[in-house]
Length: 216
Image (cartoon, rainbow, N blue to C red; front, top):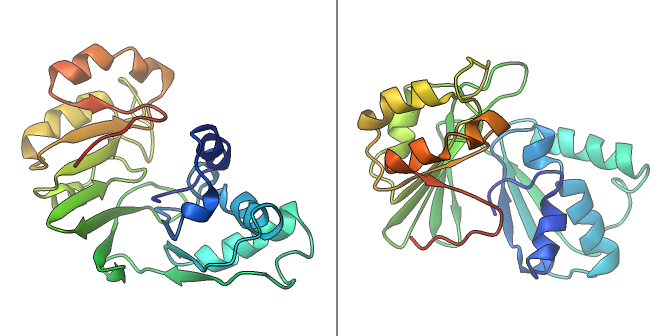
């Protein structure tokens, strides 16, 4: 799974999945809508599903400390208690990569602004490549991240306004000819951006929604 925000566990169950199906979670950055569901996932695994198999969490530098503090805020004392299953946190520096069951996960710094390090993620497996921008304003790093990917999921929060740390539609549209991904899908859309859905599809982009299934 890539990113696991505050509402992720609710939607995961709504789609009929068990959290015990998750082996690895890769986090792009440490904002609540991208990693805030992890404390609830850990508690669900500990007390509800009584998970036995290991869980691997991969995130940018600072992930373990931020996660442990979040667990302690929501459930004081639990973070340092005994866990019935093994779970680990691997901190992946931008510009480095790690192996996941034979697949290669690469991290790349993007430009989300503020005190939180934003990264984009690129997963290569069985000759296919999935790339994900994370949250970012336009940065030339997106060209490398999307390079010939079979599917590139990119955020585009704003319809027109320049928002620090996020893409807007005019800037994305301007740079579309430079992105060499075979397919591009848009996510993290604000309400004004939703009104531009017709423009996105006319430009050859796909618009993502909860529960949608895409084959790569």
